[in-house]
Image (cartoon, rainbow, N blue to C red):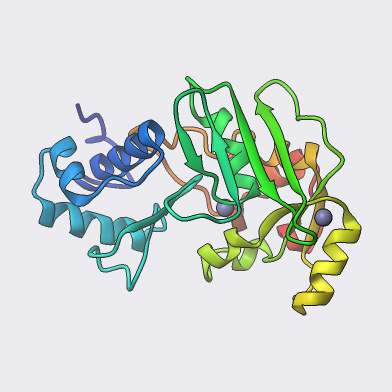
Length: 234
Ligand SMILES: [Zn+2]
Ligand SMILES: [Zn+2]
């Protein structure tokens, strides 16, 4: 069923394909192929590939390769088809968690998954960490998240950006990792701030008619999460 004819931002079949990508990721934990998407949307695989290329250009999802529609779906935020440091375990489904932001967003997005197990390793020392992330309140934890790329540049190379949004044991582990990698310091936040950042960020993404937000234009959401400074455009 399609309800997007009145949607101002995206036409069929693109919105149908986008919603089918999200439905597939949500249900199975992996990216659906062009054949599956054709079956789900009632258009040809060729039309699916052209729609995917337009969705990639519109930053509604991320294809690998040159984004011409022949590449696999790498990300449909918060979902990922490649490991970026996190796993997210639901009641019946296991997802690659994308980045720290994306992993913490999953229970807010998926109605049937009110609480998920998010697991990762500290990039600084390799120590394992896990949180039971739900909707009501931030999970306990004195770890810190470090984001490398400021919002104004998050889409310059979004897979690199997400792969550098990680959770560490402590500020000391961030410092050691920065010294070892030679990367510049980004932004450090505590676990409750990360949870508030993730809460609501992807609202509506599973439904027709979604209008995506650009990180660079989301100052009110960031300020409400407790973030501050030029890193966030604030
Ligand atoms: Zn550590
Ligand atoms: Zn991400």
